[in-house]
Image 1 (cartoon, rainbow, N blue to C red):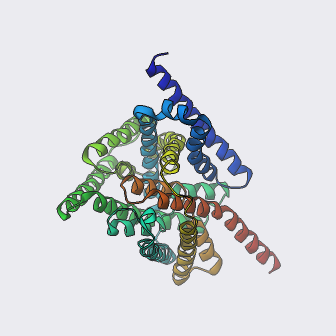
Image 2: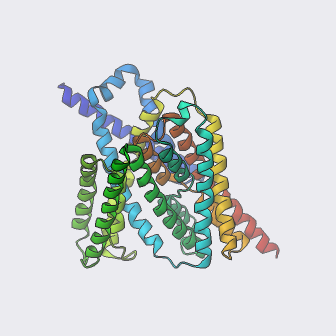
Image 3: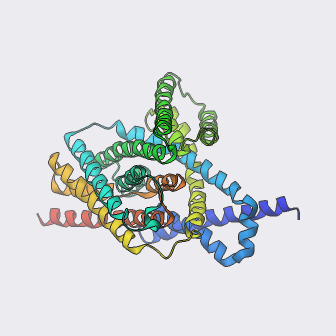
Length: 412
């Protein structure tokens, strides 16, 4: 068999294994009452290392020798770009919600305290040795740690609310709106961190920031222009156009040294949000679904990068600190902010539990920081584990809170 055909066969095998592992992970997650994405993330990350462990050095060479991982990497980044278009569109829908006093309080709480704890963790990690510190500029490093404890996964949060038939409740609207606003701040901060990490000299950093500002302005102009274009019924044609644009942005990003995730997010934010039955929303939906299907390939490639790196064991102390600070920051900060904004105790606590969901969005943020050289492998692994734990906590904690409030109401 020619080498190209053999390589294609192995690559297809790896793709099938990844997607099968994702489906198995989703099924196992449902079995234990978790959101599907928790299982998809866990098995997606483990599939690559397990495949290499079973196949040994021969399979490693066949699949990934001579740059053969590049094809799967292209698929993973394309899927990630499509997914981020959907995330940007969902963020835009979330920010359209009414801004009540309690929303402002929740946003401040879920932003300020987690970010402050992230800075504190970064300061602690700066003295923990090169395995956890890495070589990134201190400013970029501190920014990423602050961001990593601040993010909430809007798509995963929305799926949890839909599964529990809570999407139309006041708390759900507050949680999604707060998450969307906070994540917009987090993405802007991530763009700055990547610019600082990759820029080198002050002039180069300013140049990269200028490019990012230019992207933002172009997205704003595109948003104005697209609002004047009726989506009509040509949903398939628009979906193809949006998908090709997202994939094309990956090539543009590599050419100009800009993070592709941010470009895809900007495209999603530029697309008009015309309600659940609107033409633009109908056009974005299949793009996001395709991206959602391909995202496990991103986890597969990420898992190979993390678990095959030289890491002297799992950094359990850093993982434990990250989990503790992440929960304290999100649940505690949101609760205090919502209470100061006038929210009653049960609603404030429910908001804190829901906004502790990190899921895919956190992993995308971490991958972007890892690819930019800001996070070393050991810390990257610790923060991935933190993401899995905090996301897995959301369902059980929320169910327990609902049961407690139901019993209290029945007793009254």
